[in-house]
Amino acid sequence: MNYLSVENLTKSFGDRLIFGDLTFGIDQGQKVAIVAKNGNGKTTLLRCLMGMEDCDSGRVVYRNDIRVAFMEQSENLDETHTIFEAVFSHDLPELQIVKKYNQALRDGDDEAIHACYDELTELNAWDMEVKVNQILSVLKLDNTDLLIGTLSGGQKKRVALAQVLVAEADFLILDEPTNHLDLDMIEWLEEYLSKSKSTILMVTHDRYFLEVVCDTIFELEDRTIYKYKGNFSYYLEKKAERTEQLSSSIDKARNTFKKELDWIRRQPKARSTKQKARIDSFQDVKKAASQRIDEDEIDIPVKMERLGSKILELHKVGKSFGEKVILDGFTYNFQRKERLGIVGNNGTGKSTFLNIIQSREEADRGKVVTGETVVFGYYSQDLIKVDEDKKVIDVIRDIAEFIPLEKGRQLSAAQFLEKFLFDRNMHYNFVHKLSGGEKRRLKLMTVLMSNPNFLILDEPTNDLDIFVMSVLEDYLRTFEGCLIVVSHDRYFMDKMVDHLFVFEGEGAVKDIIGNYTEYRKQTAVDYKKEKQEAKDGTPTEKVKVTQLTSSSDKPAEKRKLSFKEKEEFKVLEKDMESLEAEKLVLTEKLSDASLSNEELMNAGNRLSEVVTKLDLVTDRWLELSEFV
Image 1 (cartoon, rainbow, N blue to C red):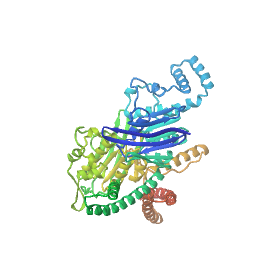
Image 2 (image 1 turned 180 degrees about the horizontal axis):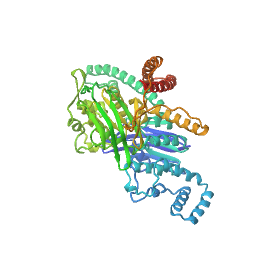
Image 3 (image 1 turned 90 degrees about the vertical axis):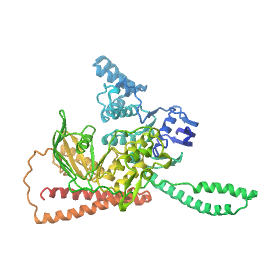
Image 4 (image 1 turned 120 degrees about the vertical axis):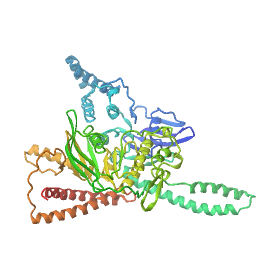
C-alpha cells in the first residue's frame, strides 16, 4: 500500500538547483533513510514533503487516511508551553485522555482520576499511558512542568522527539533524531523504531542506526535520487558497484572523446548533414567524458610537532560543583599515540574533564602537568565563531597558508579544503551561506589546520554527513599524536579508540580496554549475571576494569607471581597483540564496500570469535597484572 508518492519534484534557490525531477514512492511499513553530503538538500527535501517549503514544480501526495508526524532538525516548539503541554499537543483521543488522567494525578483530583480511569478503559488507552511514561522516562523528561524556554538545546530536541513518538502516527518523518541523545537513549530509540509498525522516512548520520533500523536507502546525489533496497551495508556495496560502473563509462567516453576530437580538428569548415549529426554526438560524448567522481578517501601524512616523554599527567585531581562530584582523586598519565574514547550520560562531567586537561577550567585540587611539546587541538560542540561575511578559504588562511607534510612537502589551504569535500566553487562562498553541517566541517578544518599533536574532539560527528565522517576517519587513522574522542556515534567510536573512560557519575570513572561495542556487550553480560545472581543467590565473576576514582584508598599488599604465572603473563601479552591486530584487520574488512555479502558475513563471524577470545585473554591478563 503506497503511503507517499513524489513526482518530478524540483527545488532551487536562485540560480542554484538543489534537486530536479525527483520521483519516488514509499510504501506502508517501509523504513527509509536519506543519505547525502551536507548542503545537498536533505532537510530541504523533508520540508518540501511536509509543505513547509515551496517547490518549483512537481507533486507530493500522501494517502488520505494516514497520520503524519514530522520532527525537524531545529526544534519548533512554543517557548511559553511546558514540556507537559508540548508532548500532549496532539488531538489523538487516546492521547488526550492520557493527558487528562496525568493532569488529574498532578492536581490530586480523585473524582477526575476515577472518571478518567473509566474513559481510559473504554478507549483501551492504558497501553498509551504506559508508552508515554516510558518515552518521557527514557528521554529524561521527568519534570514536565518546566517551560520550553528554560530548556537547553539538547532538552528541546528530546521534547520534540517525545512529541513525535507519542503521536501514534502512521508515517514518521525524522530529521536527525539521534542528535543530542546520549548512547543509552540512542540504543533505546534504535530498538523502538525497529519494532515500530509506523512507516519511517529519516535523515540520520548514525551508521549503526542506518544498519539496524532501515530497510531502504535513498541517496541524494548529483541533484537526483538513487534507490537501494537494503540496509546501510547493502547500500555501501551497491554504491561501490555503481561508482565502478560510472568510472568505467567515463573512461570509455574519454577514449571516444580523444578520437572524436581528433576527427573534429581534421574536418573542413563546410559541414554536411552527416557531419553535423556526428558533431552533435561529439557534444554528448564530451559531456560524459567531463564527469568527475568525488573520492572521499584522504591520505595526508602531516608533519606535526613531536611529542616529548612527558605528555599529560593528572595527579589526584578533584572537581565538584556544589555537592555534585565530577572527579575524585583522579590520576592518569597519557602515553604517546593514546586513542581514548569518553562515554557517560549527560551531566556526568565529560566536557568539564576536557576543559580541566586543557587548563580552560581550574580543578578544585590536585595537579595537571602538560608537556612542553604538547599542542592541543580542540573541537567543541559550539558553532564556529568567525565573521559570517568572510569567505570560506579566508577562514582557513587566517590560521595558516600551508600545512607541513612529511619529506618537506606542503598542502595549501585550498587543497586541504578540497580534501574535506569543499569543492573549488565553494572556496569563495561567504560563511553565512553555508549549511549547519558545512559550518561544522569548516570549524573542524580550522582545528586540524592548526596542526595539533594532541587532538580533542567533543561530538565531532554531530551534523556531519557520513561522507565527511569517512574522510575524518581516514585522516585520524594516520594521525600520530594523542586522540581523545567524546561521541555518541558508536560506529565512529569503535573505529577510532582502543580504550574508554566511562564516566558513571559521583566522581566514578572507569578505564576499560576495548571499543564501545565491546564495552556494551560486557555491560549486557554483567547485567544478565547480576540478574541471575539475584535470582539464584550465587555470586558471579565480573570483568575487571581499572577504577580511576579516589586515590586516597591505600593499595593492598601485592602477592608475587609464580614462575608459571609469569610465563603465562608473557604469552597473554603476545596473544593480546595478535588478537588486536586481527580484530583491526577484520574491522577494516567490514567497512570495505568491495567485499561480497559472504565475505562480509565470514569476517563478521570471525570478528565475533576474536572479540570473545580477546575478552577472555584480557580478563586473565588484567587479573595477573595486579601482581606484576
